[in-house]
Length: 396
Image (cartoon, rainbow, N blue to C red; front, side):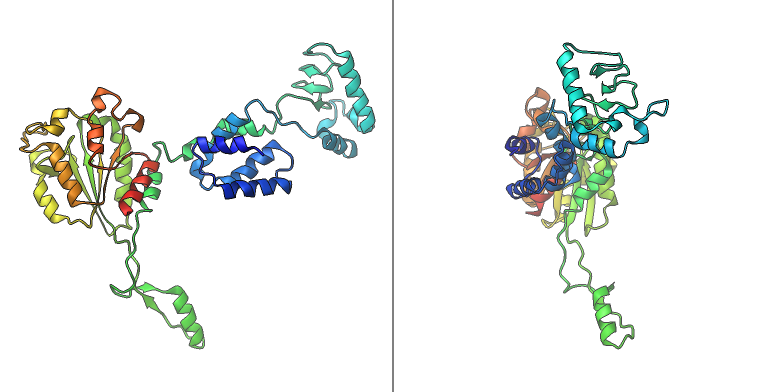
């Protein structure tokens, strides 16, 4: 059942497993969707979607698969509800009861059959025929407060309409959004220390409760060595030039990384277009901020994880030729490609984050150097999702 919907979800990038799909089928057999497309929309989302970041993809898949399908109200249940307990909204402006409240279901069926038998065309306006507008008690979009809606759009909105609104598009993690999503991605870069090193300066709450109980209720504090993140990070960022257009994106990543407190150590360095004999300790690429790259490599050992951020887009000469550097008055005796490989060998756990969409890498002349850099570093898009993929890579 709905197997094509399963494939539609997969094609939109919603990570649905077969176990989750079988759970949904079981829920449907138990009637948990209440025979309603709207009920199915929410039931399937609860069962199949594991993260709010995938809500928008789910909505896209749902809207595409069920496009053009409108849920209809259960007329029998609605009619019974009206006959047994007519609501105030069913009264006319003159406070008369709805005519349907005086009929049984057979009379209601006869009325509908008679109207449909004698009505031979579409109807807009008027007090009698099934149609739109007007004051007829049968149809939709009219002005008869005592009428029964047939067709049209429910005031409660159909599931397809809800999905098409795409109110969760801001939750996606494959687009450039806020600082918080970068922070959440960075939190996944963790490798905790053991409890065999460092001072015991963290209160062990469970141990304290247990010790206090064993001590006849007299408070006994138990202290433990904390487990701290062992990761050391270097964020090496391309500055100025073609990166100016991505300033806002990079500043969000920088802000998120700067707010992060769970790393053992995090350092920030800069370069322009490509790394050469110098790196820089400020985003202002100038001689006074220069740090010899050889000294940089001596200062930081291979335990550090290196994250390079840049568009990897430059003139081929900047990457492949000696003297190709265009940073202030720097003359590179070795090609930038040589220095990038040197960094990759020194930091075996290294990745490259690129703000240029992956669909453009190597597809236009200005992006021809990107595939050359990809041969040296695993490259990912500078999105929260791309950052998560990069983190998985450098953790391994």
